[in-house]
Image (tube, rainbow over all chains, first blue to last red; front, top):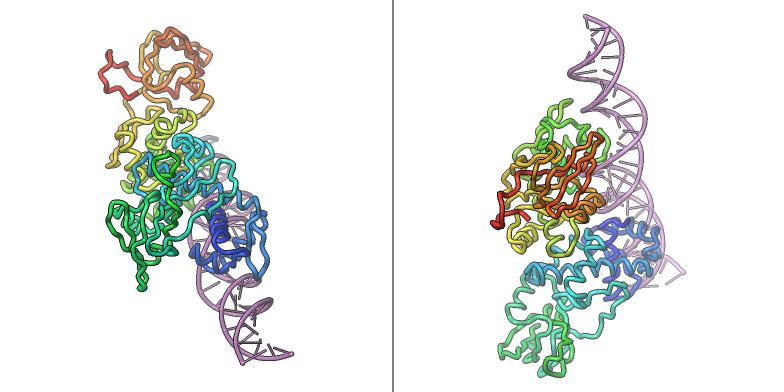
Length: 230
Length: 230
DNA sequence: CTTTTGCGTTAGACTTGTCTAATTTGGTGT
DNA sequence: ACACCAAATTAGACAAGTCTAACGCAAAAG
């Protein structure tokens, strides 16, 4: 059996592979998990022994297919739990991350199955992140672009919000911005700020680091066709 | 913060106090938790240092009020989870114990509150065990008697089933015996077996160890007054 | 082609929870 | 009162996961 810690490392490595490029340097892992470099060295040795990552000394690591499957399993747990907490227990999207971060390591496969069934096999979590399927096939993550890359006048739909800061998430949902929200880029100020206009007409200004975290795509062509992820 | 292990010891000690009498001997704790005696010695030292139990060397331990509160908190988590798993996720009462045994250590206070609210502040879990209130006051456990102590002809209502063996629990629920079931003692055989008759007319024979685990009380005088725990 | 410098690894220690083996304690039986 | 026995404690070891300090590699700078 894998420990919760090993699962955390695997999840972190997988995430870093998705963003940057393999191999992933120990220092990067250390920073993400807030541990020291020697701690990472000893843990990656263990994961490599188990065949969950490939390791090249002094270079870095990359997940093996088995390691990727483990990471996807944990991510599936995490996102199912986040969805469950919001839909069934009335949590706000700002609160769910922390709770899911702990529980993801402790639920059984039975629990996973039953939650997925109760939620009707959801495909996206409350932040718009895709939930890996039961078969744990790799997910394609890259169909959306950051809001910060769009120019004034662009009309887009929020796909995902890659921010886990509770205050910032609460601010966004209070402002009416959640996955599915359609908005227009009103102004890109040169001082590190983007102002968007919602369909309700209200304007919201966002600092760059938040505009970076908001992933958007072309709006649903129109109307309610029922396949929106919200 | 308390580790999951410390919580397990506290819960075990509290349970043993409820059954037998304090002080609780280390060997008893060791057996319940399936660890060796020296392991218990070192753990009770730690718990005593933290003020959660009182310890008399070579005698045994007893919980302090703070220790009791911790135990009740974990028991509340456990029983709320068992109730939640059956009512909201469709688990069978035979399956819930194991899952709750793990999760009880990992849910937040927020999760506890929300589950309790969704379930409308339940007072009993699926096995008929009382759920400690939010204020964690000690619960009185002793209003019921074992089915095995009743004589032929006695008519009783099942209050709790203190058995966690999945096969036995499945057998009982398949036979129609769950908390709230009214039954009559049909025969007490001298070979370690009790036969009861359900209101449906069907008879069920039970070995002593199961009849010991079934706690009963005088049936609700009659009719549906809505305060039954089922 | 050598030196520097940053990052990674090695060495060694600490904590938690566990074990086995050895020793001590306290009550029992004669 | 003494010996004995069962149970508890002490002693010492180990695995997991972490740290700090010391050392070594390898790529960049000159």
